[in-house]
Length: 626
Image (cartoon, rainbow, N blue to C red; front, side):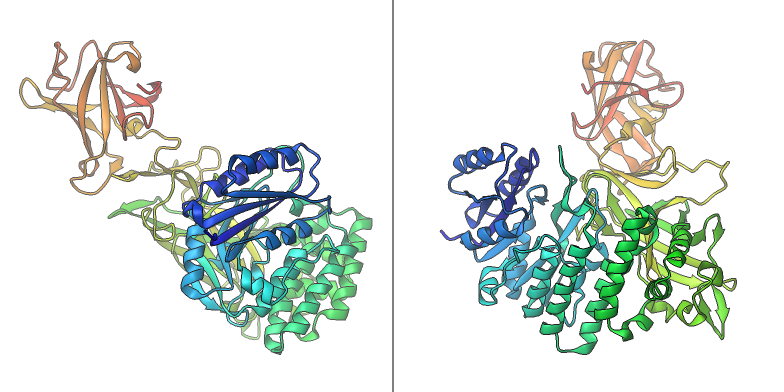
């Protein structure tokens, strides 16, 4: 049976990362008969070469392996793997990265339904910044002319094999810089149908485990790097006829591959000789290849830097970078509240310059960057363009575990106040069962982050508390359903808003307070106070209660009670009351000589929490799961 997808992995000294990479492919939800894994060892010297053979021998029907002399970079082994591929599609994967479990199934589904040449899968990273804004929605049938795919230039995508062969698309093997961008631009220029999967996480860029560094973290050789970038420009010039599209593509590389290298911490950390060589190399390329008409189209903060750069004012660039480093986003929100299963969050933010609001200056009915931020740059270069074109804002939920980012779907407005300060207001109604591509937030910790792109630069901040410093934040309620729990909470040190999904850190039973009272006859029920637990009306949540003799561990408990948690009522009802062997609550809910332990959630999913009959439940008295 011919596989539908061939996953090609170049292997060079991956250490322990290889097993994680291979495991992510073997664990795909796509039928194993429909995909194969090709491992191309590029002369590894860390013992991975025999490991590659062992892996292939253990899965002869799913994995093929080969060895080539060390080529020094990923291009050659990728090309070898593409030639070996038997699938209709080729998925490229690096040996220190992983595929999300549903990646191949979803990408193949989209590819076949849209006859795609290329499928760009949603990605996440636990160590590098990514253009998450690109994944606002799943799209199909796009071309370079009508979608900004130039902002995704890593090759870790699904490519139709016939498309690669017909256009002789392979990685250049004579360079060690930007070969991925050259390959992707060549592919984008030729592609007649590109799809982007936004509703399913597909690819994880992983922080490398063990020795060595990820390729993107190494300091670049300016001369070699920008010689390679000029080859990207050659692809654009030879493959794109529309001058407007060419200018858009050049904008991406000018701002991200050229100006970004000479700004803020990047510039300030360089040793002076290296900095000056970098400036000279990039400036030479800009003067030869960047169209003059691009500069006036830049957003104001980038246009200001561009003027200093084009004037070769290195000292001015240093001082400007010091100003930009001090430009931050202060983001705050009110106490979040649950409204019919959605978390209502009202947030606002301001751009700050050090400890004061960043204020624009008004000129001729418009706004401009303050002269003090770059005194040598004329007003024309500091003016803001149309505010709606100056940036993009988003309120996101970001996973602590892997950096996966999902839009909270907020209604956001960016305004300039009369005093020139820049304000951002956001209102979000977050449905935890729908926010992840129409599905539920996964277990773990999720941070709420406001991302503001203004005048060409991006600032991101977690949401702090909107109240005086001496006024502690309120304790938000947790939301319980049959699918699990979602608890908003404030981080301890920085007091920032996060979500704990499925009791990753905070056991829900700790939110249950002292008994209110008992009701019924001899087998009376015990009602426990739970005002900070909410859920659908009448919904019953799995829970477990154990009764022990005073001072005993819950693992020693022998008297168990049936528990009915109806969080919408603000109580936890234990029934029938502990009811055996003389353990009966009195009318005040007291159980002399006994300790009540409670777990909310399926048995074994969290710690047992002691319910203190005199005050509140406390996690400090919790024992190991019983």
